[in-house]
Length: 381
Ligand code: PLP
Image 1 (cartoon, rainbow, N blue to C red):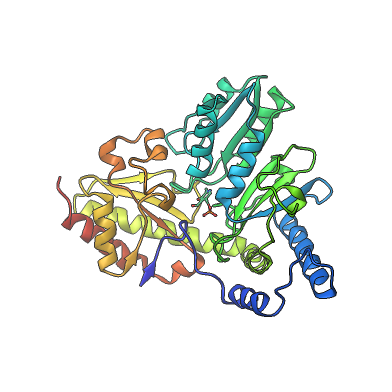
Image 2: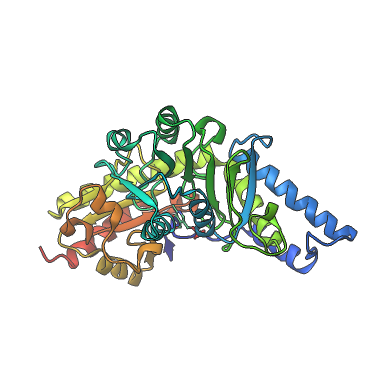
Protein backbone atom coordinates (compact mmCIF):
# COMPACT_ATOMS: atom_id res chain seq x y z
CA UNK A 1 0.00 0.00 0.00
CA UNK A 2 1.23 3.49 -0.84
CA UNK A 3 -0.17 6.11 1.53
CA UNK A 4 -0.29 9.59 0.02
CA UNK A 5 -2.84 11.32 2.22
CA UNK A 6 -0.51 12.73 4.86
CA UNK A 7 -2.22 16.14 4.94
CA UNK A 8 -5.23 14.27 6.25
CA UNK A 9 -3.31 12.38 8.89
CA UNK A 10 0.04 10.65 9.41
CA UNK A 11 1.08 7.41 11.10
CA UNK A 12 2.38 7.94 14.63
CA UNK A 13 6.15 7.56 15.14
CA UNK A 14 7.05 4.33 16.97
CA UNK A 15 8.89 6.30 19.65
CA UNK A 16 5.83 8.53 20.22
CA UNK A 17 3.54 5.49 20.40
CA UNK A 18 5.94 4.01 23.01
CA UNK A 19 5.85 7.24 25.03
CA UNK A 20 2.05 7.27 24.83
CA UNK A 21 1.86 3.68 26.03
CA UNK A 22 4.35 4.22 28.85
CA UNK A 23 2.51 7.33 30.08
CA UNK A 24 -0.90 5.62 29.90
CA UNK A 25 0.24 2.52 31.75
CA UNK A 26 2.88 3.79 34.15
CA UNK A 27 3.01 7.55 34.67
CA UNK A 28 -0.73 8.05 34.42
CA UNK A 29 -1.09 10.52 37.31
CA UNK A 30 -3.37 13.51 37.20
CA UNK A 31 -1.09 16.57 36.89
CA UNK A 32 -3.38 18.45 39.31
CA UNK A 33 -2.96 15.93 42.14
CA UNK A 34 -0.72 16.77 45.09
CA UNK A 35 1.47 13.66 45.59
CA UNK A 36 4.97 13.38 44.20
CA UNK A 37 4.38 11.33 41.01
CA UNK A 38 1.57 13.73 40.02
CA UNK A 39 3.79 16.72 40.73
CA UNK A 40 6.27 15.06 38.38
CA UNK A 41 3.52 14.78 35.73
CA UNK A 42 2.76 18.46 36.19
CA UNK A 43 6.44 19.26 35.65
CA UNK A 44 6.35 17.23 32.43
CA UNK A 45 3.33 19.21 31.32
CA UNK A 46 5.11 22.52 31.93
CA UNK A 47 8.23 21.23 30.18
CA UNK A 48 6.02 20.29 27.21
CA UNK A 49 4.75 23.87 26.96
CA UNK A 50 8.31 25.19 27.04
CA UNK A 51 9.34 22.76 24.31
CA UNK A 52 6.43 23.68 22.01
CA UNK A 53 7.27 27.37 22.46
CA UNK A 54 10.90 26.68 21.58
CA UNK A 55 9.91 24.74 18.45
CA UNK A 56 7.74 27.58 17.11
CA UNK A 57 10.34 30.21 18.00
CA UNK A 58 8.21 31.91 20.65
CA UNK A 59 9.63 33.71 23.64
CA UNK A 60 8.19 32.06 26.82
CA UNK A 61 8.03 35.44 28.54
CA UNK A 62 5.60 36.61 25.82
CA UNK A 63 3.69 33.49 24.75
CA UNK A 64 1.85 30.61 26.47
CA UNK A 65 0.46 27.26 25.30
CA UNK A 66 -3.02 25.82 25.83
CA UNK A 67 -3.20 22.14 24.93
CA UNK A 68 -6.47 21.15 23.27
CA UNK A 69 -8.12 18.01 21.92
CA UNK A 70 -7.45 19.02 18.30
CA UNK A 71 -6.49 21.91 16.08
CA UNK A 72 -10.21 22.25 15.34
CA UNK A 73 -10.75 22.96 19.02
CA UNK A 74 -7.82 25.41 19.14
CA UNK A 75 -9.27 27.29 16.15
CA UNK A 76 -12.73 27.37 17.77
CA UNK A 77 -11.16 28.59 21.02
CA UNK A 78 -9.35 31.51 19.43
CA UNK A 79 -12.15 32.61 17.08
CA UNK A 80 -14.88 32.38 19.69
CA UNK A 81 -12.73 34.45 22.02
CA UNK A 82 -11.24 36.99 19.64
CA UNK A 83 -13.98 37.80 17.14
CA UNK A 84 -15.12 41.28 17.94
CA UNK A 85 -18.86 41.94 17.81
CA UNK A 86 -18.57 45.68 17.31
CA UNK A 87 -15.78 45.72 14.77
CA UNK A 88 -14.72 43.82 11.64
CA UNK A 89 -13.11 40.38 11.55
CA UNK A 90 -11.21 39.07 8.53
CA UNK A 91 -10.57 35.51 7.35
CA UNK A 92 -9.61 34.17 3.91
CA UNK A 93 -12.05 32.13 1.84
CA UNK A 94 -9.46 29.34 1.81
CA UNK A 95 -9.39 28.74 5.56
CA UNK A 96 -9.87 25.23 6.92
CA UNK A 97 -13.47 24.53 7.87
CA UNK A 98 -12.59 24.67 11.59
CA UNK A 99 -11.92 28.38 11.07
CA UNK A 100 -14.39 29.01 8.26
CA UNK A 101 -17.45 27.38 9.82
CA UNK A 102 -16.74 28.96 13.22
CA UNK A 103 -16.45 32.38 11.57
CA UNK A 104 -19.68 31.80 9.62
CA UNK A 105 -21.50 30.76 12.76
CA UNK A 106 -20.29 33.92 14.54
CA UNK A 107 -21.41 35.99 11.53
CA UNK A 108 -24.85 34.36 11.81
CA UNK A 109 -24.91 35.63 15.38
CA UNK A 110 -24.31 39.22 14.36
CA UNK A 111 -20.51 39.44 14.16
CA UNK A 112 -19.11 41.39 11.20
CA UNK A 113 -17.16 39.04 8.97
CA UNK A 114 -15.11 40.01 5.92
CA UNK A 115 -13.85 37.24 3.62
CA UNK A 116 -10.72 38.00 1.65
CA UNK A 117 -10.15 36.20 -1.67
CA UNK A 118 -7.29 34.11 -2.99
CA UNK A 119 -5.01 34.70 -5.98
CA UNK A 120 -4.68 32.15 -8.78
CA UNK A 121 -1.89 30.38 -6.84
CA UNK A 122 -4.27 29.84 -3.91
CA UNK A 123 -2.50 32.34 -1.64
CA UNK A 124 -4.32 35.12 0.21
CA UNK A 125 -4.81 37.94 -2.29
CA UNK A 126 -2.64 40.60 -0.66
CA UNK A 127 -4.17 43.45 -2.70
CA UNK A 128 -7.68 42.38 -1.68
CA UNK A 129 -6.48 42.11 1.93
CA UNK A 130 -4.91 45.59 1.85
CA UNK A 131 -8.08 47.06 0.41
CA UNK A 132 -10.26 45.50 3.12
CA UNK A 133 -7.93 46.09 6.05
CA UNK A 134 -8.85 49.27 7.94
CA UNK A 135 -8.70 50.72 11.45
CA UNK A 136 -11.98 49.00 12.31
CA UNK A 137 -10.61 45.48 11.78
CA UNK A 138 -10.04 43.88 15.18
CA UNK A 139 -9.10 40.31 14.23
CA UNK A 140 -7.50 38.51 11.27
CA UNK A 141 -7.20 34.73 10.82
CA UNK A 142 -5.13 33.36 7.92
CA UNK A 143 -3.58 29.91 7.58
CA UNK A 144 0.15 29.54 6.84
CA UNK A 145 -0.09 26.53 4.49
CA UNK A 146 -3.29 25.62 2.66
CA UNK A 147 -4.40 22.07 3.37
CA UNK A 148 -5.95 21.99 -0.10
CA UNK A 149 -3.18 23.25 -2.38
CA UNK A 150 -0.11 23.69 -0.17
CA UNK A 151 -0.08 27.42 -1.05
CA UNK A 152 2.03 29.31 1.49
CA UNK A 153 0.83 32.62 2.89
CA UNK A 154 3.33 35.28 3.91
CA UNK A 155 2.09 35.77 7.47
CA UNK A 156 4.90 38.18 8.27
CA UNK A 157 3.70 40.61 5.60
CA UNK A 158 0.02 40.00 6.39
CA UNK A 159 0.62 40.72 10.11
CA UNK A 160 2.68 43.79 9.29
CA UNK A 161 -0.06 45.21 7.05
CA UNK A 162 -2.73 44.49 9.68
CA UNK A 163 -0.79 46.00 12.57
CA UNK A 164 0.41 49.03 10.62
CA UNK A 165 -3.19 49.92 9.82
CA UNK A 166 -4.52 48.98 13.27
CA UNK A 167 -1.85 48.30 15.92
CA UNK A 168 -4.58 46.76 18.14
CA UNK A 169 -5.59 44.22 15.50
CA UNK A 170 -5.02 40.63 16.67
CA UNK A 171 -3.70 38.08 14.16
CA UNK A 172 -4.18 34.30 14.25
CA UNK A 173 -2.30 31.83 12.05
CA UNK A 174 -3.46 28.25 11.55
CA UNK A 175 -0.10 26.51 11.28
CA UNK A 176 -1.40 22.92 11.14
CA UNK A 177 0.11 22.12 7.71
CA UNK A 178 3.21 24.24 8.37
CA UNK A 179 4.43 23.15 11.82
CA UNK A 180 7.56 20.97 11.54
CA UNK A 181 7.22 21.02 7.73
CA UNK A 182 8.25 24.52 6.76
CA UNK A 183 10.28 26.96 8.88
CA UNK A 184 8.13 29.07 11.17
CA UNK A 185 9.24 31.52 13.79
CA UNK A 186 6.45 33.08 15.79
CA UNK A 187 8.50 36.03 16.99
CA UNK A 188 9.42 36.89 13.39
CA UNK A 189 5.87 36.40 12.09
CA UNK A 190 4.53 38.64 14.85
CA UNK A 191 1.20 36.80 15.05
CA UNK A 192 -0.68 36.73 18.36
CA UNK A 193 -2.15 33.21 18.10
CA UNK A 194 -0.91 30.04 16.40
CA UNK A 195 -2.63 26.65 16.02
CA UNK A 196 -0.87 23.28 15.70
CA UNK A 197 -2.00 19.64 15.59
CA UNK A 198 -0.13 16.45 16.54
CA UNK A 199 -1.53 13.95 14.05
CA UNK A 200 -0.27 15.87 11.00
CA UNK A 201 3.33 15.50 12.19
CA UNK A 202 3.44 11.82 13.12
CA UNK A 203 2.00 12.34 16.58
CA UNK A 204 -1.20 10.85 18.01
CA UNK A 205 -4.70 11.97 17.09
CA UNK A 206 -6.77 13.97 19.55
CA UNK A 207 -4.22 16.54 20.66
CA UNK A 208 -3.41 20.02 19.43
CA UNK A 209 -2.42 23.35 20.88
CA UNK A 210 -3.09 27.04 20.73
CA UNK A 211 -0.06 29.22 21.32
CA UNK A 212 -1.06 32.73 22.36
CA UNK A 213 0.45 36.02 23.28
CA UNK A 214 -0.10 36.49 27.00
CA UNK A 215 -1.01 40.15 26.45
CA UNK A 216 -3.98 39.11 24.30
CA UNK A 217 -7.39 38.17 25.49
CA UNK A 218 -8.27 34.47 25.46
CA UNK A 219 -11.62 33.62 27.03
CA UNK A 220 -12.03 30.21 28.66
CA UNK A 221 -14.09 27.98 26.41
CA UNK A 222 -14.53 24.92 28.61
CA UNK A 223 -15.30 25.67 32.24
CA UNK A 224 -14.57 23.36 35.11
CA UNK A 225 -11.51 22.63 37.22
CA UNK A 226 -9.44 25.47 35.77
CA UNK A 227 -6.78 23.42 33.99
CA UNK A 228 -4.76 24.99 31.17
CA UNK A 229 -4.57 28.39 32.87
CA UNK A 230 -8.35 28.29 33.20
CA UNK A 231 -8.80 28.45 29.41
CA UNK A 232 -9.68 24.80 28.84
CA UNK A 233 -10.79 22.81 31.83
CA UNK A 234 -10.61 19.03 31.90
CA UNK A 235 -7.85 16.67 32.99
CA UNK A 236 -4.94 17.17 30.61
CA UNK A 237 -4.18 14.39 28.14
CA UNK A 238 -0.55 14.25 29.26
CA UNK A 239 0.29 10.95 27.47
CA UNK A 240 -0.78 12.43 24.13
CA UNK A 241 0.93 15.74 24.90
CA UNK A 242 4.22 13.95 25.64
CA UNK A 243 3.88 12.01 22.39
CA UNK A 244 3.12 15.24 20.49
CA UNK A 245 6.26 16.85 21.90
CA UNK A 246 8.37 13.81 20.96
CA UNK A 247 7.09 13.79 17.36
CA UNK A 248 7.47 17.55 17.09
CA UNK A 249 11.06 17.47 18.36
CA UNK A 250 12.01 14.72 15.91
CA UNK A 251 10.22 16.17 12.88
CA UNK A 252 11.50 19.65 13.68
CA UNK A 253 15.10 18.41 13.91
CA UNK A 254 14.75 16.90 10.41
CA UNK A 255 12.76 19.78 8.91
CA UNK A 256 15.34 21.18 6.48
CA UNK A 257 16.51 17.78 5.25
CA UNK A 258 12.94 16.46 4.84
CA UNK A 259 11.84 19.64 3.08
CA UNK A 260 14.52 19.20 0.39
CA UNK A 261 13.86 15.47 -0.01
CA UNK A 262 10.09 15.86 -0.28
CA UNK A 263 10.39 18.88 -2.61
CA UNK A 264 12.63 16.96 -5.02
CA UNK A 265 10.19 14.05 -4.92
CA UNK A 266 7.14 16.25 -5.54
CA UNK A 267 8.74 18.07 -8.47
CA UNK A 268 9.98 14.79 -10.01
CA UNK A 269 6.57 13.22 -9.64
CA UNK A 270 4.86 16.24 -11.19
CA UNK A 271 7.33 16.29 -14.10
CA UNK A 272 6.56 12.60 -14.77
CA UNK A 273 2.79 13.19 -14.50
CA UNK A 274 3.09 16.11 -16.97
CA UNK A 275 5.07 13.96 -19.39
CA UNK A 276 2.62 11.02 -19.31
CA UNK A 277 -0.42 13.30 -19.42
CA UNK A 278 0.93 14.97 -22.56
CA UNK A 279 1.75 11.60 -24.15
CA UNK A 280 -1.83 10.48 -23.46
CA UNK A 281 -3.41 13.78 -24.56
CA UNK A 282 -4.84 14.40 -21.10
CA UNK A 283 -5.35 17.97 -19.93
CA UNK A 284 -3.65 18.30 -16.55
CA UNK A 285 -4.78 20.83 -13.93
CA UNK A 286 -2.19 21.76 -11.29
CA UNK A 287 -3.61 23.78 -8.40
CA UNK A 288 -1.10 26.17 -6.89
CA UNK A 289 2.48 26.98 -7.78
CA UNK A 290 4.46 23.74 -7.41
CA UNK A 291 7.75 25.61 -6.84
CA UNK A 292 6.65 28.05 -4.15
CA UNK A 293 4.01 25.94 -2.38
CA UNK A 294 4.60 23.43 0.41
CA UNK A 295 6.45 20.39 -0.96
CA UNK A 296 4.15 18.19 1.13
CA UNK A 297 1.02 18.82 -0.96
CA UNK A 298 0.31 18.31 -4.66
CA UNK A 299 -3.20 19.14 -5.87
CA UNK A 300 -3.94 18.04 -9.43
CA UNK A 301 -6.68 16.82 -11.75
CA UNK A 302 -7.30 15.71 -15.31
CA UNK A 303 -10.08 17.43 -17.24
CA UNK A 304 -12.81 14.86 -17.90
CA UNK A 305 -11.83 12.52 -15.04
CA UNK A 306 -13.76 12.90 -11.78
CA UNK A 307 -11.41 13.16 -8.79
CA UNK A 308 -13.44 10.78 -6.69
CA UNK A 309 -13.47 8.13 -9.43
CA UNK A 310 -9.71 8.43 -9.80
CA UNK A 311 -9.29 8.20 -6.02
CA UNK A 312 -11.16 4.89 -5.86
CA UNK A 313 -9.42 3.56 -8.93
CA UNK A 314 -6.04 4.34 -7.32
CA UNK A 315 -7.27 2.77 -4.10
CA UNK A 316 -8.00 -0.48 -5.95
CA UNK A 317 -4.34 -0.42 -7.04
CA UNK A 318 -3.18 0.12 -3.44
CA UNK A 319 -2.54 3.87 -3.64
CA UNK A 320 -4.39 6.06 -1.12
CA UNK A 321 -4.85 9.73 -1.99
CA UNK A 322 -7.34 12.43 -1.00
CA UNK A 323 -9.79 14.63 -2.84
CA UNK A 324 -9.10 17.90 -1.10
CA UNK A 325 -9.41 18.11 2.62
CA UNK A 326 -10.91 15.11 4.39
CA UNK A 327 -12.49 17.63 6.76
CA UNK A 328 -14.29 19.05 3.72
CA UNK A 329 -15.58 15.79 2.36
CA UNK A 330 -19.02 16.31 3.85
CA UNK A 331 -19.46 19.62 2.05
CA UNK A 332 -19.92 19.70 -1.69
CA UNK A 333 -17.64 21.77 -3.91
CA UNK A 334 -14.34 23.16 -2.82
CA UNK A 335 -14.13 26.69 -1.40
CA UNK A 336 -10.39 26.98 -1.92
CA UNK A 337 -10.28 25.82 -5.52
CA UNK A 338 -13.32 27.91 -6.50
CA UNK A 339 -11.82 30.82 -4.54
CA UNK A 340 -8.67 30.70 -6.65
CA UNK A 341 -10.70 30.85 -9.83
CA UNK A 342 -11.08 27.19 -10.78
CA UNK A 343 -14.20 26.36 -12.79
CA UNK A 344 -16.47 23.49 -11.69
CA UNK A 345 -15.18 21.28 -14.50
CA UNK A 346 -11.68 21.72 -13.01
CA UNK A 347 -12.70 21.46 -9.35
CA UNK A 348 -14.47 18.12 -9.84
CA UNK A 349 -11.25 16.56 -11.16
CA UNK A 350 -9.31 17.27 -8.00
CA UNK A 351 -7.14 14.76 -6.20
CA UNK A 352 -4.72 15.72 -3.46
CA UNK A 353 -1.48 13.82 -3.01
CA UNK A 354 0.19 14.65 0.27
CA UNK A 355 3.54 13.37 1.32
CA UNK A 356 5.67 12.47 4.29
CA UNK A 357 9.42 11.85 4.28
CA UNK A 358 8.54 8.13 3.83
CA UNK A 359 6.87 8.91 0.48
CA UNK A 360 10.19 9.57 -1.23
CA UNK A 361 10.86 5.82 -1.39
CA UNK A 362 8.05 5.56 -3.98
CA UNK A 363 9.22 5.46 -7.62
CA UNK A 364 7.82 8.71 -9.11
CA UNK A 365 7.97 7.34 -12.66
CA UNK A 366 5.77 4.29 -12.03
CA UNK A 367 3.39 6.20 -9.74
CA UNK A 368 2.92 8.89 -12.40
CA UNK A 369 2.37 6.20 -15.05
CA UNK A 370 -0.32 4.56 -12.91
CA UNK A 371 -2.09 7.84 -12.12
CA UNK A 372 -2.21 8.84 -15.79
CA UNK A 373 -3.24 5.36 -16.94
CA UNK A 374 -6.19 5.35 -14.52
CA UNK A 375 -7.08 8.97 -15.31
CA UNK A 376 -7.24 8.03 -18.99
CA UNK A 377 -9.29 4.91 -18.29
CA UNK A 378 -11.95 6.97 -16.51
CA UNK A 379 -11.80 9.98 -18.81
CA UNK A 380 -15.05 11.05 -20.39
CA UNK A 381 -13.76 13.97 -22.45
N1 PLP B 1 -6.34 23.38 10.11
C1 PLP B 1 -5.82 22.84 9.00
C2 PLP B 1 -5.10 23.72 8.02
C3 PLP B 1 -5.96 21.46 8.75
O1 PLP B 1 -5.45 20.93 7.64
C4 PLP B 1 -6.66 20.67 9.69
C5 PLP B 1 -6.92 19.23 9.42
O2 PLP B 1 -6.96 18.82 8.27
C6 PLP B 1 -7.16 21.28 10.85
C7 PLP B 1 -6.99 22.64 11.02
C8 PLP B 1 -7.89 20.49 11.90
O3 PLP B 1 -6.98 19.66 12.58
P1 PLP B 1 -7.51 18.56 13.64
O4 PLP B 1 -7.73 17.32 12.86
O5 PLP B 1 -6.38 18.43 14.64
O6 PLP B 1 -8.71 19.10 14.26
